[in-house]
Image (tube, helix red, strand yellow):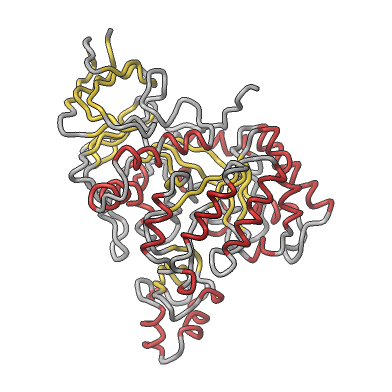
Length: 481
């Protein structure tokens, strides 16, 4: 047999969670052709994998890259860290379905500028992805906030019958065209007035399409348990899986409460399908919200429209320079972006270790000074948490980034190193892999990533893009029965 690529002597962590093993892997075209202890045959390129680990391409389940991958299809931020597939449309914010007026309302403005929103339905977005052919595969959820802005005259109050009917019509069309499910961002002002009943009724069509309900819950602060119960109720009502987005216990008073939240998840999982994603940092990032300003922890300003010179300084430092309190400083900075050091490291580790937890970067590609998670999430899990802290074995870390998310979001023939699966592959040095990106210098590619393949095409090698892209749009696969 002649292979296009033949990986020889790799330590293979196949994405299933099973212990890694030595194996050869042969690729023909866009698929993995064979996996065995020893493979013979000719190859267009034989790759000596001595001392290296071969894994499925990482699936970033929580991104806001909807428009970034079209504007910049050479998406170095993700490809350089081994990501081969991304899921967009999270937190109630999707480019798909957005029909806007004269400006982009917050928080939809996290995705891009007004001229970038040109996708009233999923078919038009899919066509744009296929035309751009980015360096990663792309799948999308449909955002509740996006639908509210399209279908409701006002965001101040729950949707009426006509509004719900209109939102459902657009959601069903997107599901017919291959969307993964529905996402909400109920903590944002634009969706905070939505009732539980509104979300339940909007989510009702998901079951027919085997979709997922993914939620940035109403709060991750003091009322986190109540917010979780609402999410689980919506899942039960719609009879669909629930994905808790970027699970955390935020705010000084809630540090340590992940023991409670994870215990609740374990109890509810006995009766329904629940999973979660998280990022491996104790800081989050979003727009600067005056309601979240506190002296309990650092808040780093990443951009400010009226005061761009303050980017890179903490709110406390800025208040000192201006001889005012932090709340006054925040008001003068708006609109602005911020990184909130709102979590405790013990909670980060506990959540990341949970068997239902998968990895999502939640990076903001439009931020001029982004959180380092945009560039470093997946190498950080492998290098810092698995290798250095030994929080979990290598095989578990890989499973959280590959096989587990592929199964959750029904990405057919992805997430495993198995004959017949797509050749989304990452070759890396486990001893050297590291997240180089920092809060001070976030735009830095990871160390230790040797090669990245997307659909059988080598997309990244020797610390640079190959110039060949093979990403495509991924639809949710519907299982029979």
